[in-house]
Image (tube, rainbow, N blue to C red; front, top):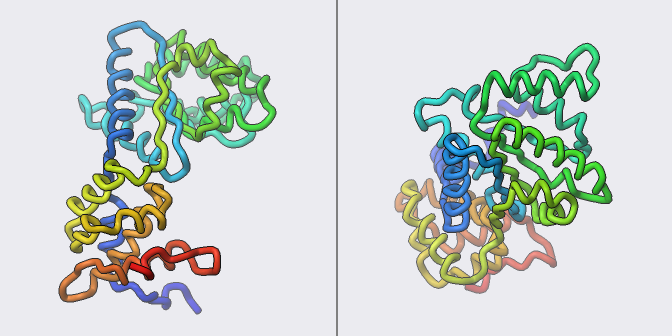
Amino acid sequence: MNLDDFKGRRSPSALRTGQAVLSLVIEYPAFRQALESCIDLIYTMQKLRMPSGILIQAEPGMGKTLLLQTIKSHMLRAAGLAKETSYLEVSLDSAVDTHKMAAAMMLALGYPMLPSRPNLDNMNQMIDKGLERKRPHALLLDELQHVCEGNRDITARAVTDWIKVRMDRYNLPIIGAGTRALERLNSINPQFTSRASATHVLAPFGLDDAWRQLLVSFSENVSEVDLGILRGPLAKSLHQATRGNLRSLKRLLVYACMYAADREIPVVSVDDLSKAFEDASGSGPDRRNPFRSV
């Protein structure tokens, strides 16, 4: 079957509703605190010579990449800054070392290719010229946990020393985001973490008031369908279904809202949530649907 001929089971209006829910940004308290801290650091260091950084430790699905995107959007809006002068962005992979870190920085600085003799000294010289020319307001490092995962302490120390030199030389604030493995940097390179000394943790929600307020925020900010059911007694079932993970919750709500979107009165029901759970999580003896017993 040609994919263009496959219509699927979702109507255009349902897909639009799903996209609206997927695009929604809910700045829950820990997210907002981390965002405000990062923005404050970036603008403070434009006035003070105080090499600093912030490390964002996040469980998968709790919004670390979204946080970096929000920081970028804020910087682009502020004072009409162009991307080329406001920030550098590097996403690391599992094999990162100083050579690959330098190569990624060269690409972030806009160099179209590596030098003809791509040894580290040559790349460092080009990077220093690029930083001197652009003077970016921040360096955003995503997937920073790859620096310190596994038995790579010597490599991790070398990479973070390389970053530290650029922090000091160009008064460059560092926003590093990764998993909880970033905690190991404290013992691997305390000189680096003494500069990137602030840490924010984006952890899954417990079954508490913060979780209930998150559900209320979704019900208030989704206008395409009625999500009033999130204000009722389903907080525990929703927590069981998602384990308090923001990405899992959003995926569940995307499917549930698409089921409701095509009805004359688009109100999300328990049945919608039950079907959405199976769409998002699959089915099997080890996957108990918490909405079937509601």
